[in-house]
Amino acid sequence: MKKLSARRRHPLAAIVVLLFALAATGGLYAAFAPAGEAKADETPAAQSLAIEEGKKLYAVGCSSCHGTGGQGTSDGPTLVGVGAAAVDFQVGTGRMPMQAPGAQAPKKPVMYSQAEIDQMAAYIASLGPGPAIPTEEQYSPEGLSAEEIAEGGVLFRTNCAQCHNFTGEGGALTEGRYAPGLDDVDPKHIYEAMQTGPQNMPSFPDTVLTEEDKREIAAYLGQVNSSEAKTPGGYKLGGFGPVAEGLFAWAIGLPILIGITVWIAAHNAKARKS
Image (cartoon, rainbow, N blue to C red; front, side):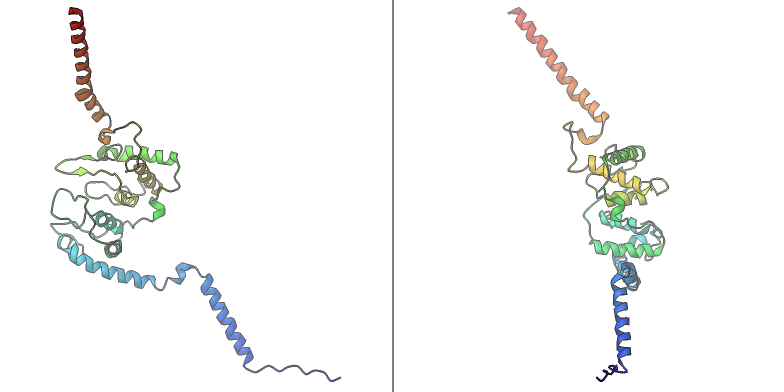
């Protein structure tokens, strides 16, 4: 029998196999490479575009008070170093742009979309380092236990109740200023307010209140001062605590009791005469 001769390979076969191997390796790398690395090339370009768009929005809506480069004017403070979180809070709650000069910028309907707010925040952040917009994991109350939320109440009463009242109902300050009510405020904005210290409020950096502390405080306010908060004691009289309750007792409750007492005494006197 004749031996079968070995099949000869085409000279280009090895090159084809090598090319397929390289393609397969590249495909596997693309499939399993970290997402952050895959997006690394486009992030700087996207960030640069956001800054440019934010600069345009800033020039139209903010520069008249804060200066063309955020340096500040006699009508508005400098924005260099306030960070993206300050922009997200002030513009995201409608406080900025202000409708008219005043002792305090009130909360009002928001004028910009969240995408536009993010662009302005990116531009202001490019002027100088400052607090960044927190992630949802930093401010979301999801996963907190009842004990942790109660601890948020202790922290709130220690650091915030002097101005905002012990359940966040707000209160008056001096010279026409006030601590706003915190009912139904987005937890993100509560977190950002503690980060940045807007208007008359002091800031609470992580060295004073940790990220977890801020998250617990936001969760506490959601429990006691929201449209879904329960009031087992009935009407809460504005949530102002013992002062309002004592005033109600003296101004309303006590006269009612005196009136009932006088009526009973007069009724008994008539009964004796008859």
